[in-house]
Length: 441
Ligand code: CA
Image 1 (cartoon, rainbow, N blue to C red):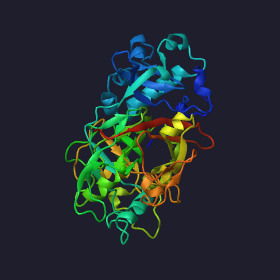
Image 2: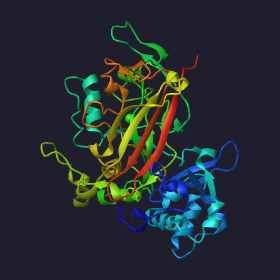
Image 3: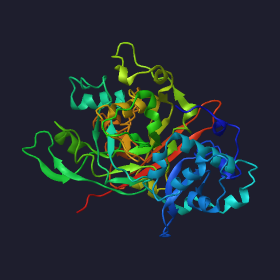
């Protein structure tokens, strides 16, 4: 696991003035990666790093040859991170990631001699567009919030909300890559088979119970060979970083189709990702012990270690906001729907990775894992509308007098996340946003 170093120092300041703004998600202690290009430019996609409200263009930086070879890994890491996808960079592993982070931190610090040359490599975030930062080979969505699993399970199976395997392993299903969308891409309401209670038979129709799911996305770094498991204490060396993920879900399609093989059309039409990937190294100040209630089954030995118990969890504050079309037209800001924290996850990142590979399944650089909807323990901390409205039975009231059980056409959902604690810089994940379009005619 990452330890604290000079790049985490909360006293560091950047010569990029917007990085000092207390509301900025991207102080010099963060340095997340994306793939971007100037908007509508048709230029080549390339890697970038967020600093304040600017993007540091890594292709321009590589061209300018400002990274000194004092650390021999940094130039190679920069060349990989400057590519049109981050797969090559993700494959390099923690030593290269750390070398580039340290080099970038030094270049962007107040007083850096390279400031004037570096200014030519900055592009305002307001002027760029992003794409999914890796060529994702496979995507697996987990179900690691016991609160979400219990809340939703109670609606689907009142007698036994949690499946019998839930407290023994991080369960998941293999998802769909082709419909991964970068934030701000519109999401079309899906069609599928609906079978309302009491109906004589199913019909093909537009979903009427469209929902969001507040999740984190996990980008895999170096993979494992087919047939080779990953030890728990080595699992995070296979994790490049985290982004926000909205697993758009059609609840009425889901309830009819999900048995016995799990979600299918209810989930395969859209999954939105935030553009910025926050590295595991940046998250080092926010680690927390992993704990398991004493009355619950303790993790099997392959999902347990002393190091993991000490710092297996991460303190990441999560939030969902909703803006309806009427709110947008009235100039009203998005309304908060719920907050939660990744610290409540029943299974950690390392446990997800280790369990995924326990069969010998090979993970590959740029693969994506979803954490599953992150709901907190309290009512009102549900990470999906199906929880907040008790399956659509209790509508939510919005600031301009509207009510919602599920999403309406024109609604925009925005996910955010941030980390803060005394003695560390506050850093954020940016936003994962998407607006609902009507079903195709
Ligand atoms: Ca999900």
